[in-house]
Length: 224
Image (tube, rainbow, N blue to C red; front, side, top):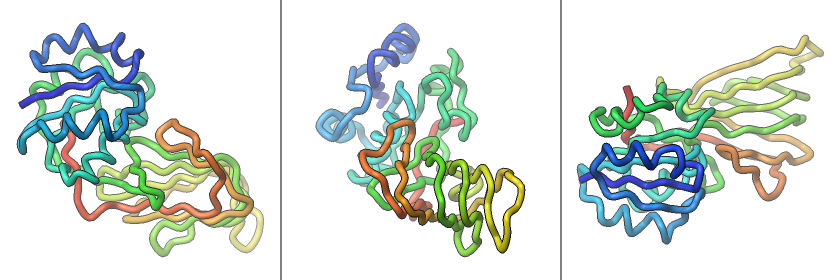
């Protein structure tokens, strides 16, 4: 069984004509769908079903949170991305008409599900602006001191990729550069607190600590 959802006006305008080719029911949802909109659709999909999500990365993240909490990660998920989608970049997804063909005919593959310690997931990218603190990836110190920014994304090879830009200090000042490391978990500690932008949605309050980690179960993404 196939079920499609469009999340927000932009997704509807972009994908509604192409979704007719899926010959599947389409539910129009808010740009950031909530439990009350998603859960009935997920409950109606049988094991082995496929959910097609047209929307931005925040919409995809909202869907993944509900799949996680409803213990429905075995459902196949196809994505019709928004322009500039970080998730599309991470997973190599088409953003044009080929995305509908992939959603209809592609094969679902298990990929890492990256969570954070505030109840969210990383669909494409979580970001932090300038900060002063420390960043670890597993036991490895990635950055210490002041940095211009931090980005966390899923690592298709098996976990989390953390990228720090700007100057860092490890026993002394060094030139600004980009530091990237991948592993099963990453952690930021900083003072003062910073806002974390989660898949394009800014946080509502500064935090001094944030962790990201690979979940014990994968999700199933329809990808090339």
